[in-house]
View 1: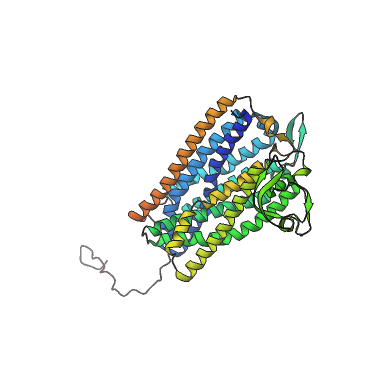
View 2 (view 1 turned 45 degrees about the vertical axis):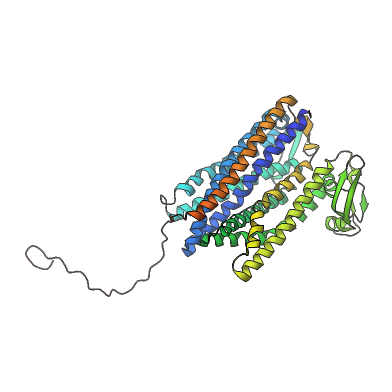
Length: 466
């Protein structure tokens, strides 16, 4: 049986993998709902409100699972990783508390108005609630990414008697990698939601659902993906340069670079062998890695031989290529779909099937990118401050193995239930179009001269005019 530390790492990885799927949707979907609501307020077109009513159900389902998975994750800080809070709790604790106080309560409170208040509050208050929920999801991401970035590039603290004490909250929050990680995550959320919108709408379209809201969701999803994927590639490149500066061993593992050298090739495919310290079946382009890492074909890049400790190469190498490969596929599909929708006005059946197949493409890219950056931080839990092995608790391997098995079974059941309910909602929306429950729109009416005679004036009991 593997040792308890490895099992605890697998358990936390499984938990974070399950959890991150749902915030990745709720962050961007909140803003998409706000867009639908504003478009309806401005135009009064029913398709925007119908789209809002369908996707708010998906948002509520996603939000609920995000909360549940986040609670189980917090338990593991105490059961499997007590050394984390013991060493850096002065930094991590307040950041997690800020997330609950400023974001979670905001989302939970106004989500109720979004779901149940459409006919109970004015349209303006309902739109404000939608804005505050969208803002809450982004604020939540802000605090979580601040903590995660600090674990990669810690700043603004000092160590006293083995514990971290904050010397500058500004430096803690806006640590060197925070702007890149935060932007990268927001764009990843946008891409996840854009392909979700396009995939589910294409599914409804293939089933013969031609309601205007289907076309609206499909177009918004495709055009949003076509816009965001180039931005994500640009931010990803900047993020890579930042990582090369602060975590060069991670870059060496991502590139499968065993030896320091100049004019380093970009390995498109290969299978790293850590024992032999080489990459088998390698297909590479000479000088390309030096070009995008140093902006020079002759640029020197440090290899894994330059570091006494480095992350495991094989999972980081493969995860990075899955992320990049999925990103290139997203670019090809979104631009092809945008061109077809622009020229034909509707998707062909082949394109619709491709979009359905890529409904969860954002999840795949997101998890691959998350593995790249988190496994690439090893053997450190907090880079240069706390090693993963030093933060582990005393739980026996058999105990961790049992809880890991239960977690995996639970997560598998929940993810299957989520996907099943999502497509059930899509089928139900197409089979039984709902009666729209729209708030009234206050549109100004022109003042026209009256063409009807005024009503007869009532007479008093004596017959005289009143």
